[in-house]
Amino acid sequence: VAFEMDSVQALFVDNGRSPCVLSWRMILFSTHVVTRALDVTGEMQFLFVSEAALLNLSLLTSDLYAAIFDVLTTGLQLTIHFYIAFFLIFAGIVLYEAGPSPANIHQGATPLDIQIRKR
Image 1 (cartoon, one colour):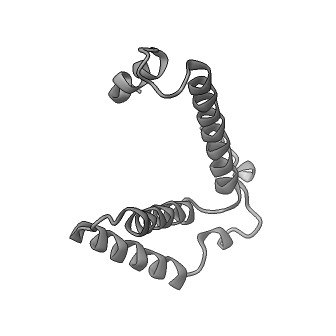
Image 2 (spheres, one colour; image 1 turned 180 degrees about the vertical axis):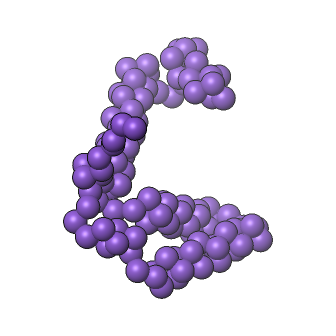
């Protein structure tokens, strides 16, 4: 929020030039907050049953889909950095899928099975 303070202030200041009334902006802002909370909750549930590496790879893959959507809808020209990142993500998926799943090492173990002992 610190880096986007000007944008946040502009959201709440009605200067008469905005095409959207303050009540509609508040509805959109509230919807954003709720969907972000649901997203974080879903990611926590995913991490409860799976690995962080798989979550990170799926999030990177969704970024690739967003870039492809931008190319198709707006004609965005991709730089060499995109292709390098695409190759690295693809290589990460191949390497991740080539080995056994770390979750299967401790069959049936969950974060609740971890016991902390005092020394």
